[in-house]
Image (cartoon, rainbow, N blue to C red; front, side):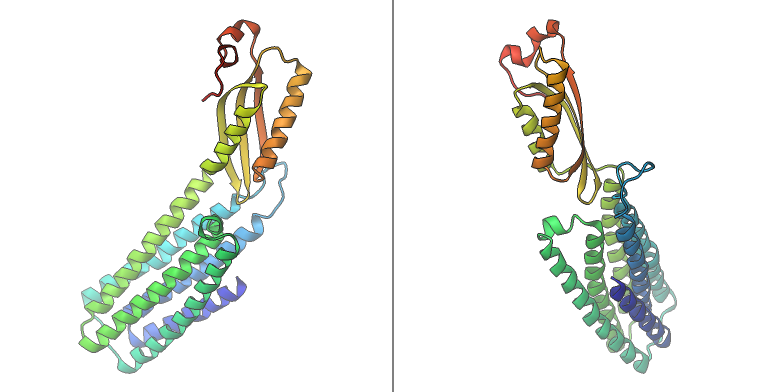
Length: 306
């Protein structure tokens, strides 16, 4: 990731210099895009380092959500530094126009061509990493990797738009093409920032485990002969590979306290084996009094619960 950060900084400087020399709004928009990407690389480095810290007294569930927090900041960076500045450049180009400089534009197109090769190579590496982590469904669960893929994909599209706008401006002499390219880059960045921000927000405020994992836990609980009903099941992702599980269950009548403890320990171990990401497991176990036994599902021959 340090190599990617250095490459983004070099590309950002090259785009900025080329944009100022040529007076190109599209190239300046891409320079802002690269600056945003560079800042996001810093955020993701912080996320990877800080999320690995072990749990302590102040944070008993660990620091796994650090990844979600820094990914949210990365989304804000894309929106503010990339999207808003690109919109500004597009509007300014439509308002006051731009004077094309053939030499400057040729140099700018060369810079963008080099950037396209670099961003394309980075995107291919990121997709290869996603494939190595189990494909899109599994690999993109990591907010850091998801942000990298989104950034690289957006960078390839953004550079393509900028090159197209600059080329059409040079051929037709109409700045509207380049202004539209800047506005399109801004719209693209705002959309990507919104999607990344929404996903990071959902994970940060407490997203439930995958329905498939929750279903396996519920099925396991219902299959236990000592459990009369599953009254409630709560799950929450506390990190990339860690989930909190809390269940409220009613036991069949007649179990003594020692037996209840044995059952609870066995169920927790079974859940941990069935769902490896379940790092914290809490059971609210109730042995209902005998007067309620006649109304229980066990007494009526029913199984299951909510």
